[in-house]
Image 1 (cartoon, rainbow, N blue to C red):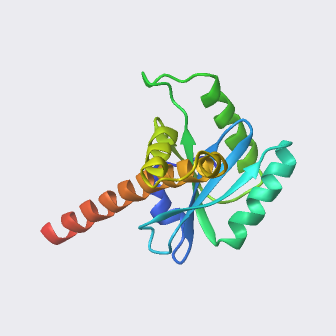
Image 2 (image 1 turned 90 degrees about the vertical axis):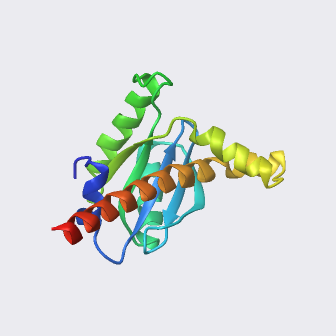
Length: 165
């Protein structure tokens, strides 16, 4: 399935499924999963990257076991909003992965997600060593939570329009 606009996930992911958030790095893929009501994102796992086929297989197996119906992947835009090499790499991964997986995939601006996740972990007094092993999944949760909040706002706006009409 090609990538979709974030608003389309409501229709395409299906009822009774979760959403996954991915923080795609050069060495790891951080994964977070929502609850069934699409309200809260929870950091779940970090996949150590090796080769694309192995990464994709491990990711697909995890997503299937978590009942994921749609994927939100962080798009690492530059601070000025331009696209650099990391965005190109992310788009290439998604193009290749989408050939193997029917789940809808939406991009979400991930600027400062790792910074925010790091600050949150520091405020919770998580040790440096534990932060290092958990940061990618925490960043994925931050990305996913942003998308979940946007989906809720879209849904609430739709409800308000229906009650006005």
